[in-house]
Image (cartoon, rainbow, N blue to C red; front, side):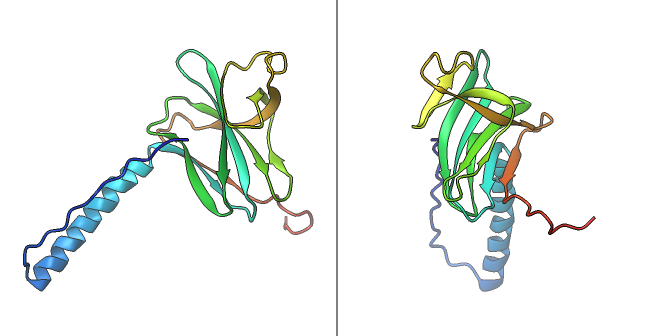
Length: 162
């Protein structure tokens, strides 16, 4: 749903001695990773750590209204940015469906969804407005500028210790 900017890097044709070339490459690598790690830290990301494909919807409060959006389809063991840039809310709400095992991750914060791709303003009277009323679980980011949510397989009973 959101586009990620691309950066084109030109190639230099200057002839540089081998030790200087490696030192320069190491410097650029450190510079690139520190710049890209700063960018990666300013998002709300969701990682699907299951063996199934999942569909994800998100709810949040913008400047004036509650908004729900969906669906992001995540392949198994993949991540997706749901909200690009620095987070402006402390609380976000997630609902996810396991397409392969028919499970779900939900909660007690009820918001509006629908089966097809959507952006819905407002969380009142979902059914009366032609939407589904769906329970989302709350994410408290603690007012961090970035956050990553990881969906995992449910723990099997009898496999854990005390």
